[in-house]
Length: 169
Image (cartoon, rainbow, N blue to C red):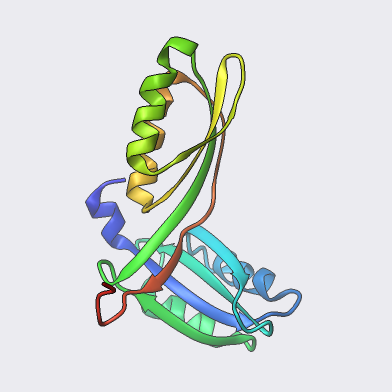
């Protein structure tokens, strides 16, 4: 993903009531208005009555203000936060099964170790790997694996939180 395309994306964190059908209404809102969702992740919060939806929206498909105004009209939306680039921590998880001849495994494991990933399973001619990191790091590792032959790939949507005012020591 290029820097230019990355900057036109907006990451919204939407806190909603944890009720049946809320995610469907949010997704339907985007579909009806032809807003392009680049990434979507949802999970309950520490308050069992609330869920947090992280949505990466393509800014070229819809102005951010219009997206926020439409979300605010939904009854189950409690809070919307626009996370500015550089002012949030974003992470994603990738699980990937890649074809690997035994004589190339050391190269992949070395690069995976440097990236902070883990080997999840090893077969005769394939390995399943796991990596958590910033989306651009996940993209780069996926690109590295592509020449080996990706057999199966699953990536979560981005999850994000605003940076804290004070750095953690």
